[in-house]
Length: 487
Image (cartoon, rainbow, N blue to C red; front, side, top):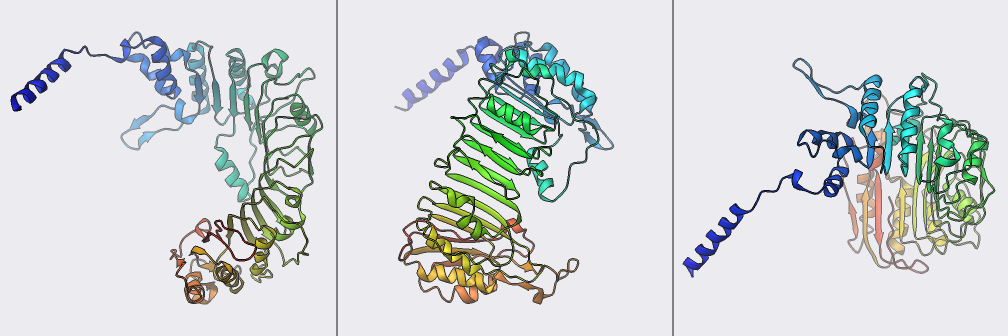
């Protein structure tokens, strides 16, 4: 048996040695093209030096992404190390070089993401014309020089964009009637847009995003009314826009995102969306129908009681609402009149409240126990504000005592510095509420089923780490089985 095993092993090794080695160049061209299409354009170009056969394969690359990462060269200086700064003229030159060598066919997606402006118009126009000629299905032009996440983070902290140069004005040729047949996704950021009088629309466009775009109300309405297959529309920080209106029906429309358009006064769309994300002041939201609207995410930048908004605001007009996320700057305590309306479909509710009380709280968190009454079928409830205040403890105790089959309550409190008592980096113990101590002393003592777990959080943690989580399977009386999380 031993000899047979050794013989089989030697035969297997001998066969492997006799196998012909296959290199990348031996693969068929269609397979090579597929492999290279999975690489970023800069890496695909580098394969051209591997063999003669690979020299021009990248020229049919289907995804063209031009940004700092794909267009930069890394220089090494002994004194300073790696130097990776990319100047605008270097970026322009490299994009032009790539596009001159590309076949100009089969492009699925083309992205231009770099800080450019009107003085680069001649080059950008050529890139736009290349996207048109190559029949690209997805086109992204972002001349802000930063990511969307970084852009909105600056807005959140009240930092306005500093305009140093005139924005690039998108060439009118892009909107030519013969050029809208293939485009399915269009994302524009930090550009100026003026529709020509003969604009016929993008017949196959499904997704449209306008961020920091100089555009008029009339052009927004015209664009929406002539994109009949549109499913997703985002408009964010468009400072000229005062009204988002579209009376032409959009039967396929599903998702609407509106984020901090500072002059916006109304939204009126002849459609029935399924999801809505909105950030800004409270404005009228008018849709042809709200029967399909199941998921909304709202950030209200002016003082607004969350309970009032839920019970009497826009959300109260949504019979099919399943998921609601709401951030409010909470003013003084508001007495919400009890009514007969209940959110019978609401399953997920997430609230984040920012206190605007100059150090003297005038709100009562126990009021939010009312949510369990008006939304009797909740499965997940998140309330982001546990610091150990008396009314917060009372709310937690209310849930704990009225939850017959509560399985888990996890509290992750944080030290909160009183609004007007902070001084540099040194704080007296009397200036904060120790949420961990309060939760341990009062909530754990009331826990007779061993379901409460209080987690210690370092005092240096940020506001995003503040959480109080309650996981439940069922509630007493009118609260059905499910999971409820208080954060």
